[in-house]
Length: 266
Length: 97
Image (cartoon, rainbow over all chains, first blue to last red; front, side, top):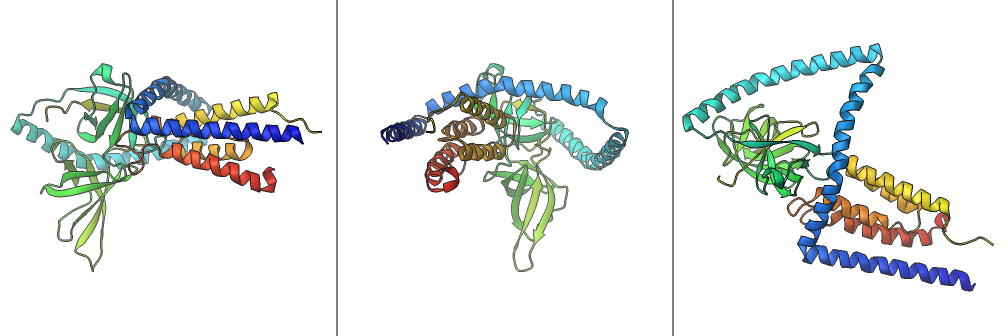
């Protein structure tokens, strides 16, 4: 009888000590944000090597796996990739016009060419909890909070939120709950893009607004970069507004490389 | 009489599961790690490690601006509530006693 009671008392002491420790952690992280920043920096720094190992390991494995594929699976994969290329060629025909327009605009405005730092994405949605990218460049590469993330040279994705020595966290504009002011289509309709998460946006526009699938939106202050592309719209007969759905300019679940540009002078 | 106390095998199992969950936190979607933390709490006694994994999720993937509706320590708080309730529920449920 005596021994189990002593064990139970010891377990309760451990539980109480744990909850006190958790309370202490909460208080220090809430009222002293720098302690959480330090902890976050240490955790991210320790994880960078693991993420980098995973990135290089994946490329080695995918190369080796091709030797083990059967003939049928290779034929099926070939067919799938051919269809994908055909679809991308169709999409690209729309982008050619945008790029040409962009170059003409830049020439007219004599904008200075952006110098950016290239980085690799080491963690992306769905691994990251929110629509965030973890990239393998940081303060030692000149990255600062507030710098913008680009892809393919003309697509803007998000903003650097936290930068550490060798790592930076970027919040994408498509993060759920995020709102961004943008200009849509050739008429530069002002819209407010609301992030839905997963690289998607939604905006409310007047019913009479002329919006087509494939129209691109650029952020206010960054007219030379594509921020979102219209995929569909939803109209209801008894409402004066239409819901327009957008997707981000790239597939954020597959993205590998980005460019960070300094925006302090904008 | 059944001997109380932690065996070597239990320690090894616990370390192995903690390592596996750490691997999941780093390389798999967050909900996979959460699910296995839930399983860990069901099978191990006083799975306090879930709190540290929650803190890790908040530290790795959240920032001042990127958080759950303004609350930065969402996963750590959820883990704490879950640990507390799992301890209480397991005391009441015959399967775990």
